[in-house]
Every structure is written in structure tokens, then in C-alpha cells.
Image (cartoon, rainbow, N blue to C red; front, side, top):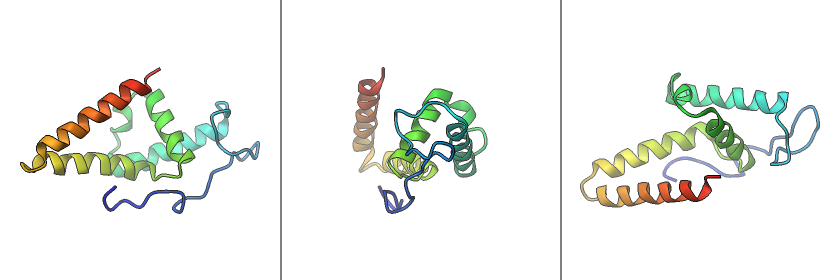
Length: 115
């Protein structure tokens, strides 16, 4: 993933303050989850601009943020690297076609992941 440091060694597993349970799919919407979402939304806004989060579907942002917590990935950095790496690859005539193939593959994965 380029220069982005990501993975379990970056951020410890988060636990819910009230229940003490690890964040997982069985977790219900709670004050803890809302606080995590709010914190990560600010992180994204700091990295990508204040209007970025407002242009994304709320449910998608929530599920993305919680997935990055579960996988101990840097929430805003992943988005930033995704965008900038695509732009670099697309802008280069030597890698333009491969960038579009990668884009199409992500679209395919998104269709598979859709409920």
C-alpha cells in the first residue's frame, strides 16, 4: 500500500468503554460506537477536507470506519492513499490502463459486497 503504514502493529484493538467488549459485528449501536464514528470522521475531515464526509453515504462511512477499527488500519490514510495512488497511476501513460483495471476490479468487489 505505498508509503502508508497499516496493520495490527499500528493501533491496538479498541474495546468498548461501557461494556469492555472488543468491537465486533455483534456490537450494537451505542454511545461508544457513535464516539468512534465521530472521532474517525474528524480524522477523515482533517486529511481529506471538511466536506468529504458530507458527500459520502452515512451508512457507508460508518461501516468503513468500523471496518478499519476491526482491522487496525489507519482510517483516513487508507482513503487518502487510495485516491492519490489511483491518481498517480491513472495520470501516467504507462500505467493508465492498469489503473482502470484496478478501478474496475474494485467496482466488481463492491458489487459482490453489496447486500
